Image 1 (tube, one colour):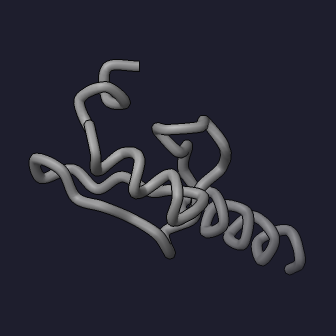
Image 2 (cartoon, rainbow, N blue to C red):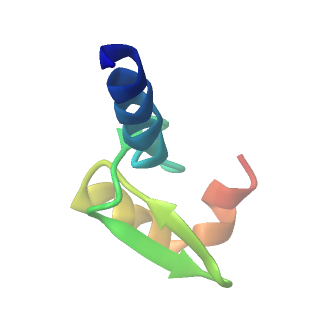
Length: 61
């Protein structure tokens, strides 16, 4: 019973986080930006602002 609960919880929590393209830290889906149809998530408003100044510099990383 608990195994299936924790397995689902783990899968759900993994989906909600990705890597911030600016600093490389773990980013949630609360702060994001869309560029060329792709959504990018950020750890902070600062990283989002930096990305939006020159997205191509961070996508190439």
